[in-house]
Image 1 (cartoon, rainbow, N blue to C red):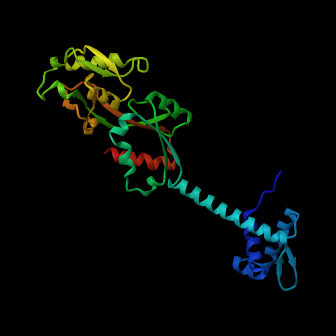
Image 2: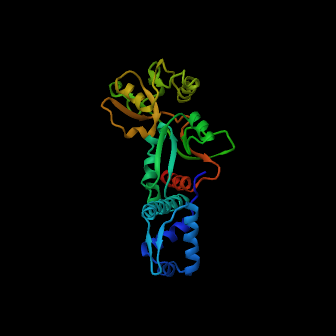
Image 3: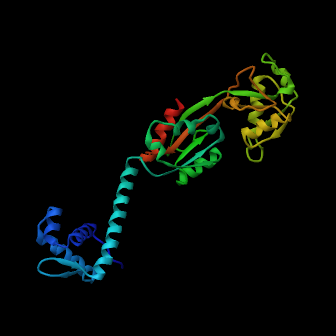
Length: 296
């Protein structure tokens, strides 16, 4: 088994080695000379090495002692850096945070708003952003693979703390060539192709989408599948379909896309939930606070 170094003994050794005098080193350390001498002798005994040539007036480092001095200084410096890092992590000023998110959290600028927080500790976080579906986030949150989840749905587990931090309505995105005015009627959307999520990946997507259309008052003719809101807008821009998307996408400017309010408000809306496991760690608490402030 390797040696276990006593950092206090190493500090004593460095003080004596740099001054080459036990008495002066003891005064600088605010301790008596005899205990300091015993600590140095004990260190040499543990190492099985003679670190000093001893004379009546002063000490001189042996060649082994000079080499050990360099290593001892490096070890103490590393220990000090580690101590400072631990203290920073305790205060939420350092550390890595794994954050899962859905596209809607990005389009609503929730994460970017949090990163603009006046709390300087937020900028010190090593943030890893991982795009994934809500269900996958809940699984990885439970296993500890991510620390924070930004999802469309609220988790069912009692071990996960969740808060709705954002909601917004749906709007209609159509090709400009359709010439749909703002005072259009729902029946004008009958027979149009619409974009929705892939049924293989999202089995309930079609049913939910049709329910939204019926609540507004029209029936879509067919559909084109797209995995993300931005992909849906590209299909609209190409004139291939219409799409019902979250209102925050209205800021995106595409040549052949116009946005309109829906003629009636559907019962469902886009919601974003912020979730984490139980009592947050200091670094999680800093990010959670920034997220909640950014969502206000």
